[in-house]
Every structure is written in C-alpha cells, then in structure tokens.
Image (cartoon, rainbow, N blue to C red; front, top):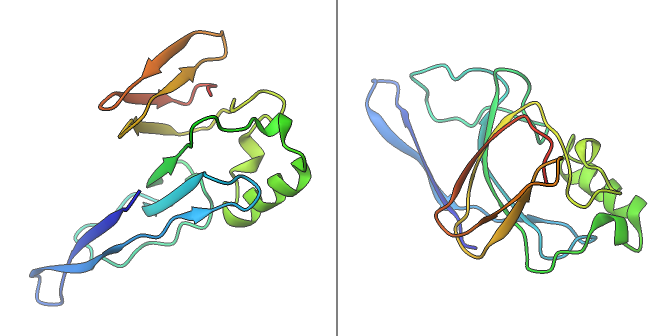
Amino acid sequence: MNIRCVVTGRDSSGKSVFTKDSAVAPVMLDQLPGLEFHRLWGSDSLPQLPSNGTPPPCPRYFPPAGGFRFGFFTVPPETQSLAEHPNLPAAFAELESKFPGLAEVLEPLNHGMHTTDTVDFDVVISGEIYLELDNGAEVLLEPGDCVIQNGTRHA
C-alpha cells in the first residue's frame, strides 16, 4: 500500500505550516514476507501543543502509558503462523531488531495471539480479516470496519 503522511506545525512566528509531505516506506521483515509496517507518528508522552511538527522519539513499537502510536500494519492473505515458521528464533530476532518490544508480546504457539497495555484503533482498508479473542469468539472484519481494542488478548 502507498502511504503518504502530511504533518503540520507552527513556525517561529506562530503561523501554521506544512512540515512534512512525503511517502512513508514500509518496514518489512525478511523472515515474514508480505507483512508491512508503516510507522507514521507517535510519542512516548502526551503531546505538547502547539508543536513545530518535529517527530517525537518513539524507540519501541508500543508506547508507554500516556504515549501513542499511529501507523498501518498490512497482513497478507494466508499469513503463515509463527508456530509453523521454519526458523522461529530468526523470525523473533528480526522482529525485535526492527520493532523493539513487539516480539515480547507475541505468543508463538498461539497464532497471532497477543496482549498489550494499549488502546488500539484498527480500521480495515481492504480485504478481510478475522479478529479472535482469547475465549475463541471471532468476528469477520471487512473494509470500513473499525475496532477499538482495549488491552485485551486477541489475534
């Protein structure tokens, strides 16, 4: 997917300006082909406004309490379970290298299942995907469907 990010801020005189308008290249994983991560914006603390539009540092994949992340995550059709991966240690090492903190919440023996201390806002842009909860309940999500994931175990 082609993702474009436009960011605004204020200049030294207080006028609104565009500080960024560019394509965002996906970060991909050699060990898990087809997955794409577009990291657009985030902060490890509450935003301080007005802002000059400089991206705050956000070194880990998930934010700490009071922080946030905004991005796109693409799941290709027929994605292989991590439990079935021929080189599970290498896949986890690559995840941790490119997305610090992501691998530590995944459950490799439970396909896609994970829990985070975050509120996630998910929107299906195209295709369809099942959201599964830890009790086995599932819902089919299609384009336009939105999910507010409140720190629950899910896949």
